[in-house]
Image 1 (cartoon, rainbow, N blue to C red):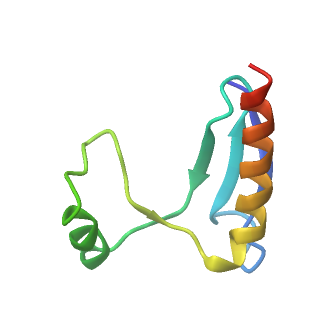
Image 2: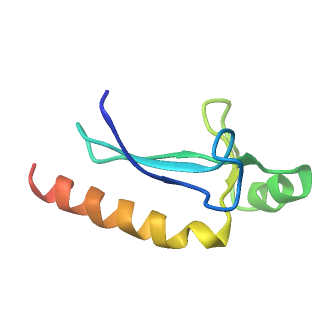
Image 3: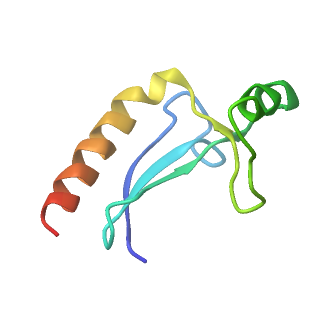
Length: 81
């Protein structure tokens, strides 16, 4: 797997913080974020089950520009396939 880095949360220490990448092979978005608390997971469970292979994460709104940039890149990469 080859991940293309798009950015880290600009308001954290730069070491352990939310991060966004795009997988260069299949154009998937890859996120590192804060684990959701129990109340957030409970809200998500009203829509459906959260399998063991999945996680609910939080991303700060200040990272929306980085996520948009990554989404645009993922979309462009997927159109090339």
